Each structure stands twice: as C-alpha cells, then as structure tokens.
Amino acid sequence: MRQPVLSALVLAFLSASCGLKQEVKEDYPVRDFADGPLAGLAGGRAWAMKSGHVKRSGLGGSQIAFAFKSDDNDKGCDGIMRGLDGITVGITVEEALGEQELKGTTVPATIAVGDDVYTTTGNKIEIAAITETAVTGRLSMYTSDELYVNGSFSALRCF
Image 1 (cartoon, helix red, strand yellow):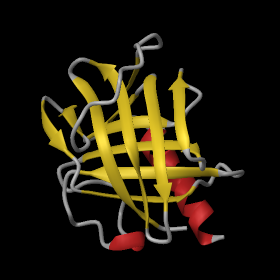
Image 2 (cartoon, helix red, strand yellow; image 1 turned 90 degrees about the horizontal axis):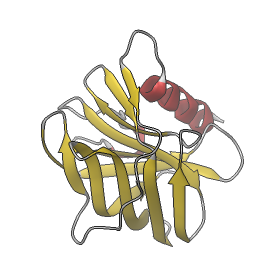
Image 3 (tube, helix red, strand yellow; image 1 turned 45 degrees about the horizontal axis):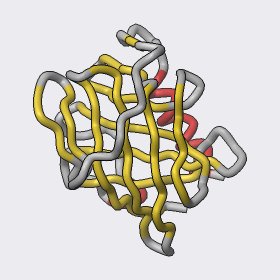
Image 4 (cartoon, helix red, strand yellow; image 1 turned 90 degrees about the vertical axis):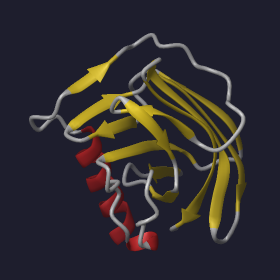
C-alpha cells in the first residue's frame, strides 16, 4: 500500500501545477531510439542518466512509474525521486514487455528542471526485460530539440 501512495505523491509532485511552470507542446513527433545510454538536454545543459528506479504506479492497474536522475545518490528503493542537480525524468507506463508509443498529454511523462515541469508528448518506451532486480529497455522522450532524453536504461526494480 505504501508504494502506490508514494508513487501517486511523486507523480503529483512532478506534474502538479502548484505555482510551477508547465509547458506542453501537443504535437511533438515521436523519435527513434538513440544508440547508447539514456542522455539528452535539460535545463540548458547536457544530461546523462546515472541512476533510476521503477515503482508500482499510484494510478492503479498494471502501470509502473520510472524516475531517472543524473546522479548516483539514489539510495535504492527508498530514495528520493528528485536529482541533486534538480533534474528528474519521470514516466508512467504499462508493465509490459515490448514497445509502447506514448503520444499526447494523457501519459504522465515529465522532465522536471528545478521548479519547472515540462510535459513531454513525443514519447516511446521499449521494455526489454523485467527481472527480480531491474527493468531494462530504451526510452525516447521529447518536448523540443532543447529538452529531451533518449537512449537505453537499467532501473532498479522496487515492486
């Protein structure tokens, strides 16, 4: 029970509009997966994933919520979702192997940069494996050519 509530709170934190700037570009195209580890541009600078975890989503059903950060201060499954540099990439998807194209704003997909939360609309994820300890795959999330992440990931499984 604790994990769904925590996931819902984290998602609310990342996407809530409590005075935070939110920008959405509805029609950004879905891009092909990049070769190499999950990286991109965020907050006007290069961003590269160093840690990530995935928990059962608080939205119910068979959804899981990922959080990726550019620091390795994750603290495992009890770690905070926000990166030390203030940048966190989050996305909620169905717990299923294979590729999922996630178009539009109904999918909780955000890049948080400081107090600004950007909803990405050109998204797709491929979940390649779900093991006892990790979820691996590839992710492509874009809101503009200046704010995106793309590449492969391995996230600590916390469910």
